[in-house]
Image 1 (cartoon, rainbow, N blue to C red):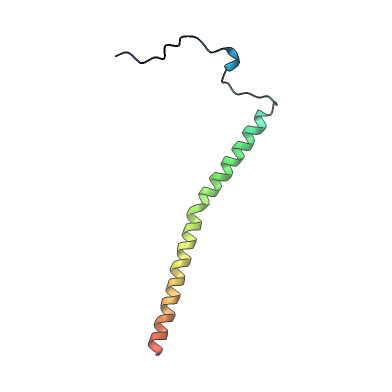
Image 2 (tube, rainbow, N blue to C red):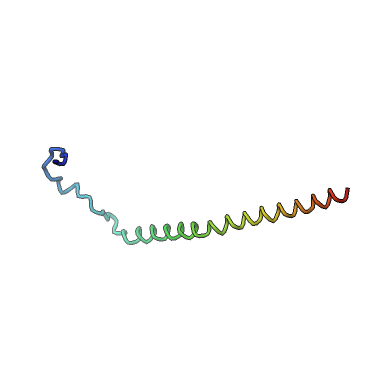
Amino acid sequence: MAQPTSGITERMPEHYDLTLLDPDNKLGRDIAIMRAEIEELHAKLARMPAVIARAALGIIFSTAIITTLLGWWFLAR
């Protein structure tokens, strides 16, 4: 079975080359900034389970305290 083709057999002109462009000669700086931002996002994502666990423990502890106080109040009546 033949692969479908577009019928275009010409090469793209050189001015449409899709390589990385570096007009201001600061490509290294830009890559360093992107890496720093990716590392920051990675650190934030790594802390998420701890934040969720802390919130869950707070909810559990608060529920236990409220239940205990309400139980004592009902028994005292």
